[in-house]
Length: 281
Ligand code: AMP
Image 1 (cartoon, rainbow, N blue to C red):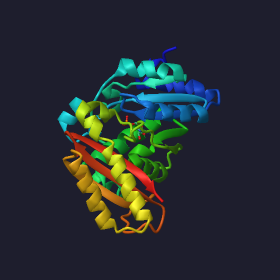
Image 2: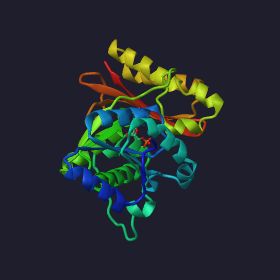
Image 3: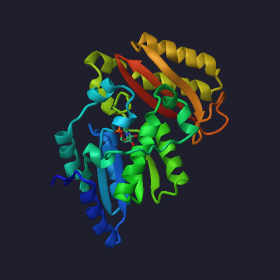
């Protein structure tokens, strides 16, 4: 059965109120649609952990840096509903934009520190857009638990921080990155890759794995990064925004693997910006 699509705040509120009265827990999976197995893995985790599950689909204009990127973002609502049908989701919340940003909307949620590095440094305002919409979706759905992918590792840390800082009554749950067979992290943006670029794309993950292995065996970070970047450029990537070794949790920059660490990267391939991250050690 297709999950019911709800488009207004009033309708999702009344649905959730009934569940809460019955003492049921609510899980939310925020997405921008163009759903793939990565999203569906979050839905399965939410189903396993909560009585009721809401998937939200909202292409949030405030987290895009360029109007062209927003216009190009894939939108596949009918296909999304078809993919969700077998999973037993209780509601698919697809808010009309004015349900999120009504006229006169003037508030921005901004997380300091964590958002100033990595993607935050390259996409000004992006994380303010994310933090604002996520706060709205949390309060609108009154979720007890919210599921996010490690694929967007920095986003996961930002959302965890804001939820703690604002005492939001929601537990943020991180879920592992789901990959294609060739290692490419699943992403809605992969749909924007040409057939040729799709063949080159897994080089990002391969280069990161090689760099991580080098770090674990005591290799020099600067030399390993230079090798990885050269490998990506040879493979057809046109630029690397960052390829950093950072501490899990606070994302501080590391020069050696002396605590739990992650490699995080963003690189451009045929006009598409791909991001990925892996644990090191
Ligand atoms: P998006 O629709 O790209 O905004 O992503 C919605 C949620 O799905 C975010 O929490 C992402 O981190 C998560 N997600 C996206 N791709 C993957 C993936 N390959 N594996 C696990 N989670 C993912």
